[in-house]
Length: 254
Image 1 (cartoon, rainbow, N blue to C red):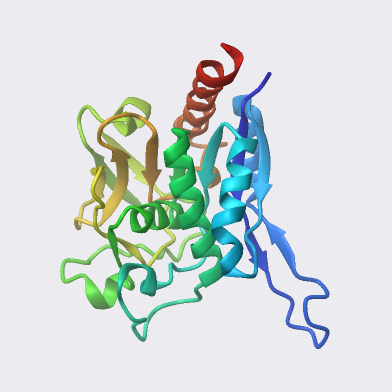
Image 2 (cartoon, rainbow, N blue to C red; image 1 turned 180 degrees about the vertical axis):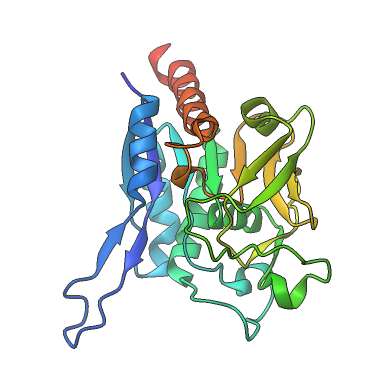
């Protein structure tokens, strides 16, 4: 059977007078389509409105899938890494953060593979004890590349350098031209993670787990590029491959 790949959901909030009438949980269609094409079965995991239920829900759902994709989305709430919000921070979603952090910990305990995109690399880093720049232009003294691009989101706009010997280099090569839609970024990598890609101004563009291949994260959006820049599709083939290996080793061999 095909491996099941979970995507965490964002929330479409309805602001009409009737509260919650048209609220909806959602995930990027481009990631769903990439997973299907790569041979996986996508499912979407919504987050609970009550953060007190985040841990229990994460423990319940972790058995439903073989691999996890953490998509982009709103800014990460800085209180999760010990800071108050700066003036330039964007929209945050505290409930989403709480659930994804709980889910990341459950997935790590289960040994399941993860691929993280944009916000996903940031929340994974925070879940493991790392920190973020809440706003690159106002906080990073070396910031000089426009990381929140004005071009359409599927267009590449700046280059990245990829660390030799990393999983990301295996998939993409030593240098790549990527899109860029963020103003937050990893500041300090969490214990257990290593930096695998950087922009020319030093902004961290990739992280991986040090001791195994359980985690690969990128700051750009390969889901918006893979139909044209086909090398970006390798990330989705990779998470499906890692999930299939997990499935075979832990379920189908028993």
